[in-house]
Amino acid sequence: MSGLNTLTATELAHKIDAGAATAEAIVNAHLERIAQRDGDVLAWSHLARDAALARAKALDRGPRQGLLHGIPMGVKDIIDSVDQPTTYGSPIYQTHQPLADAATVALAKGEGAILLGKTVTTEFANRHPGPTKNPHNPAHTPGGSSSGSAAAVADFQVMLATGTQTGGSVIRPGAYCGIVAYKPTYGHLAPAGMKANTEWLDTIGLYARSVEDIALFRAALLAAPYAPIRKLATPPRIAVCFTPHRAELSKEGEQAVLDAAQQLEKAGARVSELELPDPVPKMTEGQRILSAFDGPRAHADESRRFHHLLSESLKKDKLAVGSKIDYATWAAARKLGEQGRAKADALFADFDVILTAPAPGEAPVGLESTGKATFNLLWTYLWMPCITLPLTKGPTGLPVGIQLVGRQHEDATLLDIAAWTRGALA
Image 1 (spheres, rainbow, N blue to C red):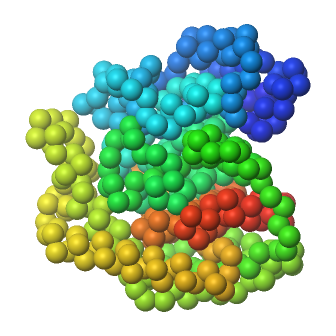
Image 2: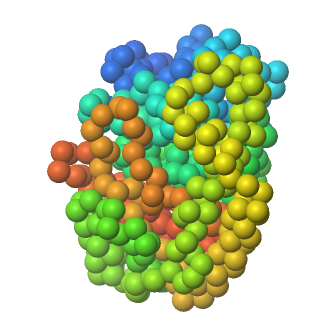
């Protein structure tokens, strides 16, 4: 397979500047790929073919508009778009048309991005799956809840896409689909216009096929000057951490972390092992409490007026569980998060990045479940930036990745280390 849709956004930006590619040709290459493949993958809830081409032609007639000039992107269908339907993965909102773009959508458009369409989300970014299949094997899940975004980027149907993570909904699908997925420090990307799930955890994240593209996309959505990936002066200090849940790792998931640690040490990294101090190991349960508590509140209107249109999964896993959690338990979970973040931040005096697993292993078979978020919940609760990188393949030939976790607010450093890591593992 070759074509404009197989290049990275960074590569295409250079081609556009050199006059070697047009936005129209780039959009057409992606639409052709979608026509060939999306009948099998089912990554899109809405595809704006005509609008995307019209936008591309307009961009080709004018001067360079910004960092993402002429670059197609997908937006998870939990994030509002003024010119395309936003269904939140629910039949309740089948005809919903927002009155404004979400902040991240508006910022991307302002930088010249072309909104190719909306990508499939699970119902309200919870556990009830959408129709999307893993592009590497349609019998396996692509992960969730950002299933459409991860699958579309992995299948070369779009080069950039947004997702959201409340538990593991950016990193896990990225690992299952074999692409680069980035969950920023909590609050770094503006959540305005995103359908709320758990506001103390909800984080907009990014998908691409290179770390360099993540840096480009991040700058555009931060409305910040673009800082290219920096070359490290010295190899990083890496702490290998299996979390308290090592027993839940598959053989291939554990081996990926061990192999990566060994290769990175050979490349010059200083590798050590990390045992998480109290109260950090207990924080996975705290994440579940916060997430469940907000369920009946975030979906109060839908539950009151359209209870019959909600999935049994949402009713059972979120609404029923959350209604039984009292204020004192919720407040204790909030305080636990504050204590754990302080402890986790102090650890970075001894290392630069944590190396861990992004998922138990390769994507499980079946589409009834999106997989376990066990290896994401802790870092989401700690508000720490995370990135997953593809590494190897599992026993059925599906991708298996690794996850790097950085210090809160030091996302640029995490991306620099991720680029070094990917080079060292190549």
